[in-house]
Length: 339
Image (cartoon, rainbow, N blue to C red; front, side):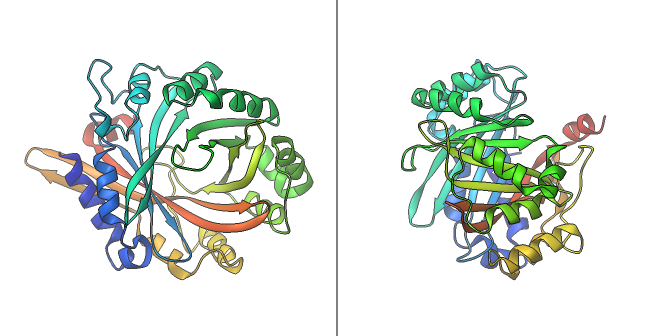
């Protein structure tokens, strides 16, 4: 089916029931333009809606192209690569050590959307990361990536790397996942977490960063950290901590965002911290898996709340955001996932 048509159906389903006004705001036209510039592969890209949980309703859009959906022999014009054709050409020739290439679109109703580019890896291969940064036109970020890697605490691994050409300093962003055994250790001993965050370069903790990260660690959801890396390889003042609620259909640990369970109790706490209002209650109605058919073609469109992320700047809390994952799976895709 035509990718643009599937996107329109997905967005309409996600934004129905008053959710556009409460959550998405008036970013839909800019998102439509961004999506049209994100369809380099032959399969429908994985979509992420990034939604702030306080303030004026709006969203940003992320479109992820998976390894194997690009034909290395097919020309990739810049207009379907978010302005990164060299990076997509490089990605098309990679092997199993990479997973996805993401275009992250900053959407503003009165401005043309602009994209950052991120690499999601299947395993940490330093040469792959260096080659990605070079293909993205950010060879200057290689040294800061290497210096940051040398700082990583034992038991942490990095899962994605991104560059943001439109942002001041064009910072390098890295996401880190602590080993599962570390999460209960952080919940029990926040000073261990302080030591590990200080090791990567966090200098200012303020009054909330450690106790709230301890609370996040003391949930059943997987904890991840995001850092913007400075020129010397240390983590910059802005830090993110996110929790993963669910995985795509067909994966073993599939679970729904349950507003009446642990997820709801967490969101109530985030409201008490002043980082969200009651719009989060709408997230529980946004999990769906609908069959769509057109002539002889059919697929399943799905959407669910996958992450919540909190951010701090120099130890001062900034905001909370929800991340909704959406996409399309053909019957063949679903059978492959379930076997």
